[in-house]
Length: 124
Image (cartoon, rainbow, N blue to C red):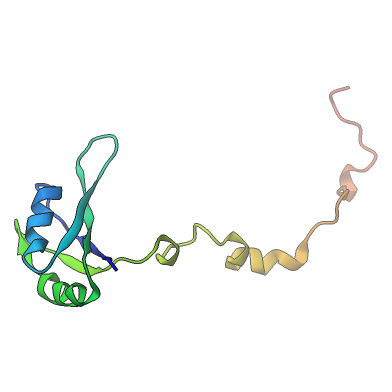
């Protein structure tokens, strides 16, 4: 079963082929991909490497984490599925401290403020 590695702090000169060659010295690489910006086509500074088996993954992480290339120390760890990434606040709005604080103060449907009752609108 292939296992995916996250590789961070990649230099701008790094491309898929160079990443493949760099990691193939530590095991069988099935796929190496540098993530690029879709507009500028420049590297975003990180990529993913798929290794053939789990044994190679652990030894590759130990060998390549902190490895210096083009003046940068690589950050290598196991890639997490998209749902398990850390996020600041983006997904769970109902669980935010603000919503929890004011959840019990919901305004009833059809509510009109007392000072607006009986006033006519200026439109006509």
